[in-house]
Length: 289
Ligand SMILES: Cc1cc2nc3c(=O)[nH]c(=O)nc-3n(C[C@H](O)[C@H](O)[C@H](O)COP(=O)(O)OP(=O)(O)OC[C@H]3O[C@@H](n4cnc5c(N)ncnc54)[C@H](O)[C@@H]3O)c2cc1C
Image (cartoon, rainbow, N blue to C red; front, side, top):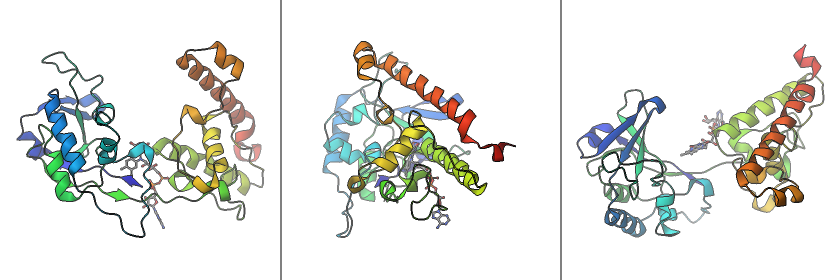
């Protein structure tokens, strides 16, 4: 399951005593909610812990996607979890004090008229009334008008390790290809990338040529490897992470203690493997000519 954020209208925000700092270049607006006062954070946390959630139906089996947990679930995992997640203040100094606040919230502009904002990372599965009550405790959002509340939605995906080959087509129906969320990858980039890959493979097949799967060493290959080789019984969608890439050899890992350097080497290998595949195998001559 994944959960959507709620949206708030700018009008309500402007009537509040928030400090508005717009980063136009990035199209982002940050509101530092002045939760530098830990007592305010505590009030939000307590309200969250006590807030009433939407009860799942008998036939529902709630199984949250770890990369997109609802705030009430994050709160349940520890007092500071939110401060290290969606309320993380790192990199946002309060210009008046020069200090990093205790916690912050980030509002992202959601439309060209710039009158609707999304409270980033505040996905939740609370009852609507409870959402308003809790979120209005955030300094600056006391008078926010909520345009849409957060709600839960279901991720639909096939059991890729059971049915999919490494060229993203069905074992039993090879002319049917899967990519994106439904194939078990998670995220914008992952979905677009596997979409391009499936397109390439199907175009290759349509030309009567055999597709060469993208190498396991690449990020794309690692993602496909994950969705096609994961445990069939406990399959869950995944984003691309360094964990999915081919690890460096034990010897090299022992020698290079710096994690960044290890990652750099993994990337270097991946890019070399990708280039080699792209130039020699990805696009058969029947397509490129
Ligand atoms: C609240 C939320 C926040 C997210 N935040 C991020 C984020 O910050 N970064 C990130 O990388 N990813 C994020 N994701 C995940 C990301 O949105 C998805 O992984 C990605 O959009 C999947 O792309 P897709 O094209 O595979 O599927 P989708 O974007 O779901 O597109 C599938 C399309 O198919 C259409 N469709 C469905 N059934 C039919 C049918 N029968 N006939 C015709 N059309 C049909 C749907 O209407 C939809 O338009 C988020 C997801 C959610 C829900």
